[in-house]
Image (cartoon, rainbow, N blue to C red; front, side, top):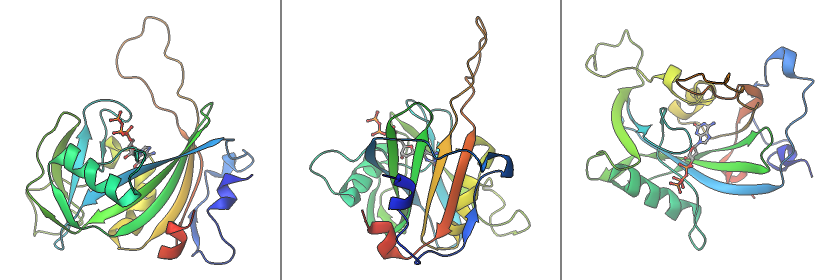
Length: 217
Ligand SMILES: Nc1[nH]c(=O)nc2c1ncn2[C@H]1C[C@H](O)[C@@H](COP(=O)(O)OP(=O)(O)OP(=O)(O)O)O1
């Protein structure tokens, strides 16, 4: 089965925003055999603030991202999103619409990560550091906007490389679907130290999509 097609019911998506660098279009989508559900949650405010978490350990450590993780057996995706947000940022979501769904594949991995993205528009508590994440407020307004000079811009250079492709849809409150395949990370030369390089993006697409499509299996 083509997992890429399984997220694309006929005729219902908006224009595809990107489709991989032109020299990679001949590459096939990576084969996967297991679909695993994950959540990815971003607290945002009406006046353009967004809370990102610096991941302290595990998958994606050293990057800013939303809060989230695996959906555990017996819980809904929504419950998992709420739980992970509480575990990782110490806040309880009270308004959390589903806004996106992205699938990630990694060369030589059988797992297709099925990531449900939520926008947290209201919550109880203040984001604070946990074992896994260090939350930090950023602004999504352009640098020329004087209303929030004290907040840093969204740090795309310190985030997953796909984020700046779909953030425009997220920030515009559009619902979206997409897929990104990653190449294997280059092997570090023997004896070399320092930060491990990540796999580059091999092929991808994102499109605005109706909420029903994001929620279909
Ligand atoms: N390319 C990518 N771009 C992105 O923006 N987020 C990604 C991503 N690939 C993975 N993620 C997110 C999805 C999810 O929120 C997180 C991965 O989840 P984790 O491994 O942190 O899961 P868990 O917190 O359940 O792990 P454990 O704490 O080890 O159980 O990274």
